[in-house]
Image (cartoon, rainbow, N blue to C red; front, side, top):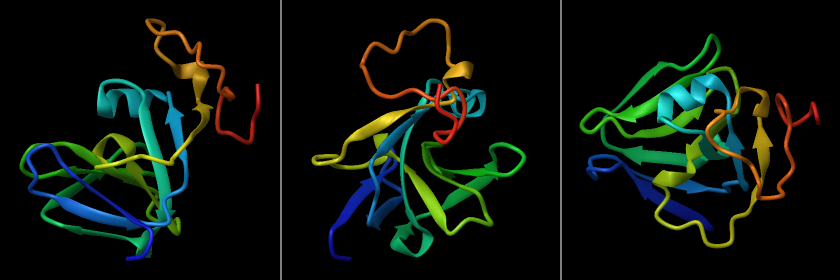
Length: 132
């Protein structure tokens, strides 16, 4: 894959390559916080631009989305809405993020009260189309 990035789970049982990843968003919704233990940092691409090797399990993340984890170590790797043409890669699983920018915070109305957002990035109460 041209202009691709690689990544893997904690134990290395799942490796992947993704082409065309867009910049990173921080999601503070409850589902993301419960699934990862904090807010989620993710970037997306077209589904056909992501290939992986190794065993993953897709589980319900919300009523309309799923999260993929390594079957061996449980690391969260990908997020998708099955009917969408895109898939999100969790930025923490990327081997390198050089040249990628964080564009902002979404679902800030659901963020944990234990952390501030002093970074000056744009913030949206819900999804990024609904600016606060």
